[in-house]
Amino acid sequence: MHLTLWATHEKQQHALACQQQLKQLGVITALQMIEKINPKHLRQHPELALVLDENGLNLAASGMKMQPDWIGQIARLKRASHKNELIARACQTEQQPVLIDATAGLGHDGLLLAWLGARVTLIERHPVLFALLQDAYQCAMQHSELTETMQRVQLVHDEASNYLTQLQQHNSIVDVVYLDPMFPKGGHKDQKKQALVKKEMQILHQLLPEHGTMDLGEYLLPLAQQLAGRVIVKRPRHAPTLSSAVPQHQWIGDACRFDGYFQPGLQ
Ligand SMILES: C[S@@+](CC[C@H](N)C(=O)[O-])C[C@H]1O[C@@H](n2cnc3c(N)ncnc32)[C@H](O)[C@@H]1O
Image (cartoon, rainbow, N blue to C red; front, side, top):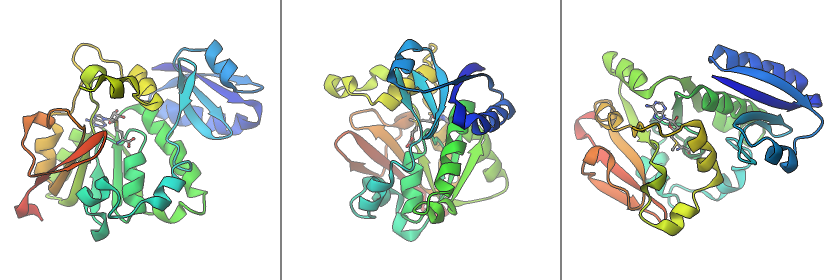
């Protein structure tokens, strides 16, 4: 994969380090140093690219940019509790579970779960998203309010089915596997909600284009069920269940819901 990496002059050292990390992940970048990265620059260069500015590494496209903004999540994290977050209730964070977030994406869900006490392994297979996660993790490690949470976060660059299969072959068991696979762009029943698909998802859909058959992660559920007493799947509120499997419990929110599959023998 080839991408342009835009960076401001004062970020040159950081840019070279990112370039190296990306190369190890199989992403070749053409480094372009510029004075300032502002909305005008993003509009003038609408093609998919990486952008390194004072906030860290971003993915940019169509005049927008986005990143796993873990520092920006702190306000939300401070309001979160085991009770007021459906995801926390579904994943039983109060029990400080060992949890695999097998579809990390921007890591926002995993970060919240770790903040509330879970020991989280974030698995992401896409090299560019993984590089964004690595950068977010490094920034968070240096932020006094996130350092402690980062001790409970581990990043793994892998296809989740490989990773889960390997754990299973070693007879490993975890408390929770959390799945939030991609959902097709047109998959929302509610057209208004569809129009409001967040900026992050719009850019993400450019990075992970829907070439005919999009990988919806159907195969992850049975694998996860062999490994964890509790599997939680995030879905848009009105979406069909993953793999058409009937959940034992659902936690339903405004825009999304969490489907729970429990394996008592593994708990
Ligand atoms: C909808 S996003 C997850 C968003 C995430 N819950 C968050 O809070 O940011 C899905 C992510 O899972 C990744 N993914 C999908 N299937 C995967 C698989 N089989 N193995 C590893 N990563 C996968 C995609 O690359 C994408 O980044």
